Length: 104
Image (cartoon, rainbow, N blue to C red; front, side, top):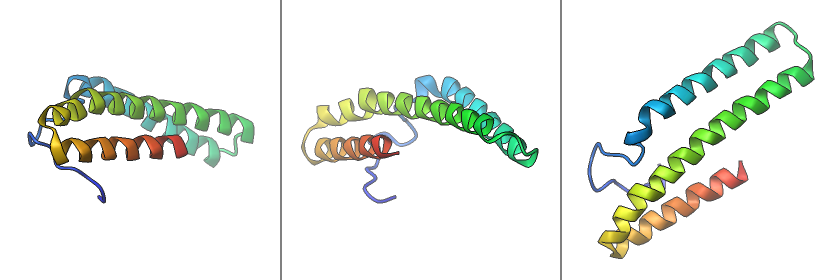
């Protein structure tokens, strides 16, 4: 992945405290996407399908915001304590992630 900065503590990620909740939300979103697929296969009315796409998109956005919040609170703060190039790289990485979320 381009622009990826290695973690200072391998295996430790900022979202580890929220992992169970994030996995639960992802499973729910996965179920929503499967439901959308079934709706299309069953020729469900377009607006009803779009409503479900919107709900699935919102679910994934919620996960993305939680991951971003955890990244800022843990990874970026930890890098800021280290200072120097590591801190600069983590801030750039977080800024790029925010830009991707805003554009999506």
